[in-house]
Length: 225
Image 1 (cartoon, rainbow, N blue to C red):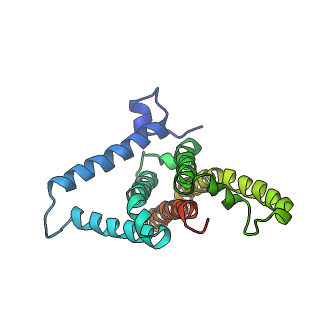
Image 2: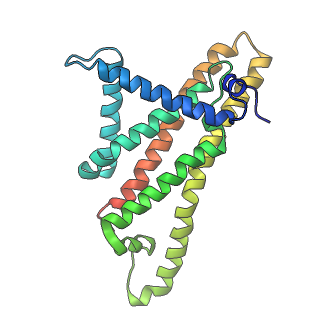
Image 3: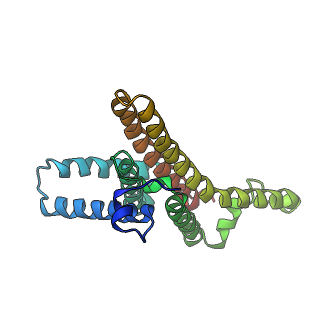
């Protein structure tokens, strides 16, 4: 049973995780519009923070995917990081819920990532992308080994959206339950220590999801195929 929340009470027919997911999107869009209106050659405040994030996303993408495709994918990676981080931080606000503590939210991000990197794999390499699933030794004599590697790699790829979804969901759910339990046991200490830990976990889990997405995209478009 989901715990009561502010948006859940205001919009009772809409699941809480959906409401907070839209709120996270609205928060990011509103922030971006505000920053855009106040752009200047000498960054300050929110613009300075966003430029730091942008440089971080771009350097991460280019160092893992390459300069050419890094420029293509870093807006996607930045959006994933900021959205997940915002959703995670909602869980630290009293009366709010973290949308990422629901498996539906995490799956709605993991499945498109899976489809996207498979799409770019075929777009960049064509049918030769299938060689990625057949192992390093590709000859007539190695056909049994290639078939074994193909099914092994196929299962590995199909599991990726599941692991992406469950990893983020499990960590956010555990954080939410930990805050509730320890808050009841030690209400005078937990609000400082555990909320700080929860903030750190929120950033780390957003980074892990973004980094795994980066590596999947890099594996799909790299010339090693």
